[in-house]
Length: 137
Image (cartoon, rainbow, N blue to C red; front, side, top):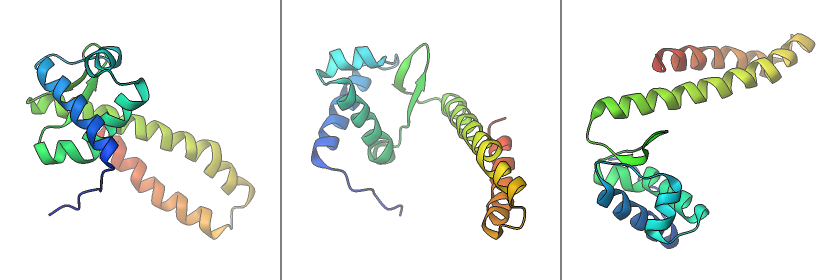
């Protein structure tokens, strides 16, 4: 059984408010501004509630929280929506990792090619980068 991340009571409260608002809006989603209005929370509180849902609530309720530009945050029962969202997240992570490699690790290796740590990091990240590239297709 997966370990449940301990939630702070306030984050759990924000998550519950956001969850109820998203369930009431179903099948439509809600943009951040709409969630602020529906929950009467601040933007940072809504964001904290979303994080709580992603960390704890979605696993408990078996429905992932996804985000789409046109729809905002939403619960979807369609696995195709989940896959689309997951691929976008993998592309974002791949982009960040690629920039870290090309902007930091590659210059490090160019300057100190015998640095053992940089060699290990480069070898490991090459595999991660290839995996993320496949997952984001």
